[in-house]
Image 1 (cartoon, helix red, strand yellow):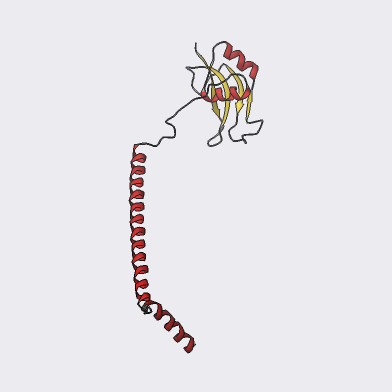
Image 2 (image 1 turned 180 degrees about the horizontal axis):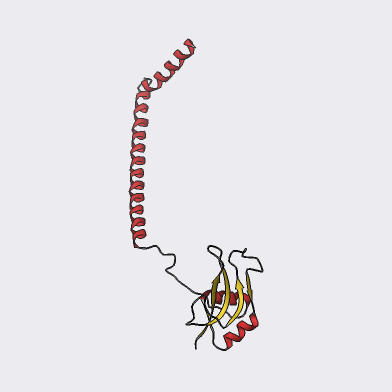
Amino acid sequence: MAVVMRLSRGGSKKRPYYRIVVADERAPRDGKYIEKIGNYDPRLAKDSPDRITLDADRAKHWLSVGAQPSDRVARFLDAAGVKERAARNNPKKGEPGEKAKELLEEKAAKAAAAEEAAREAEEAAKAAAAEVAAAPAEEVSAGEVPAAEEAPVAEASEEKVEG
């Protein structure tokens, strides 16, 4: 007979409460068990001392006779210092799926195209500014005042006279 240490659910709908039990692995989750060794109330605060109660001596006994803890019970046993739990490593856990990867590639391509367009627009603006800067320098050197500079001054003086 294979023996496991697992959680048995109690409580009403949307109000979970678990017993930490030692049971035959063939028994139903909430069915017959050999011994109750603790409680777990997930609704309590994580730092609450009543969240998990565990009889460490009985847990050690059942581990010594070959009982296998479930993942969650193994976490509780590790926190209580009864049995060390090996850290798990799942390198693909945070990796996005195929569809998400395709969307990221499309987004990166659009961003690169937008950056290229912005760079070209900036270069065009610099070239236009250079042309404008070169043109007034030629006109001023000829002794003429550029028309672009005269118009705003004239408009501003007319507004002051009226007001």
